[in-house]
Image (cartoon, rainbow, N blue to C red):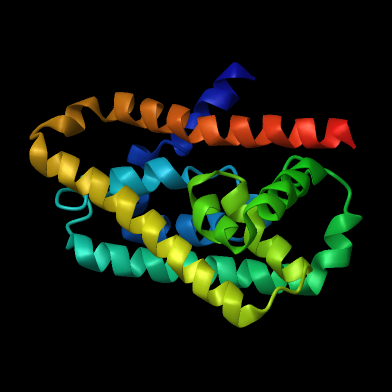
Amino acid sequence: MLCEVQSLLDYLNPENLIHYGGLTLLIIIIFAESGLFFGFFLPGDSLLFIAGLMSDSVLEINVAVLIIVLLIAATSGSTTGYFFGKWAGAYLLHRRENIFFKRSYVETTSAFYQKHGMMAFVMGRFIPIVRTFVPILAGMAKIDFGKFLFFNFLGAAIWIVVMVLAGHLLGRAIPGIESYIEYIVIGMVLLSAIPVIITWMKNRKIISKK
């Protein structure tokens, strides 16, 4: 069992994903994590950061082109999530829970949206699980599509530019930083977990008060 978990973690390691899957797999993962309910476990933040770090070496792509391509993937994924939520909202609310779908994911995302309104599409991009489910929730709530599209694009643009450029500029500023990429990935995963834990704890307090 431990070996199977370790193998899964190796497959989801951002460095391995970029090395073996290249730009194509990178696009697929960002698309899936941005709005397909089973994509919530994918390493979006760390993957974007490492993609920026490895843009000149492994990916061999201009960072501006990389940002544009990933922006298209992210907005397309969340737009797909919106229409999926609009079409299958009732089904999701009564869906049986499994490893890919838990009602708590929707509840956490709903609490985050109720607190932040349309800015949830911007701020939520930096919170794993929330960034996957908030477009689906928008479709379920039948939020005006034009309004959703604007904030969806804004959130995706800020998220991708910040994460990719941070990795790219770090790689330019510190030659040989790729030798420490495993430590960077661990740090990114831990940083990504902090807002998830905070949001989850706040959501528990809200539910307990009701």
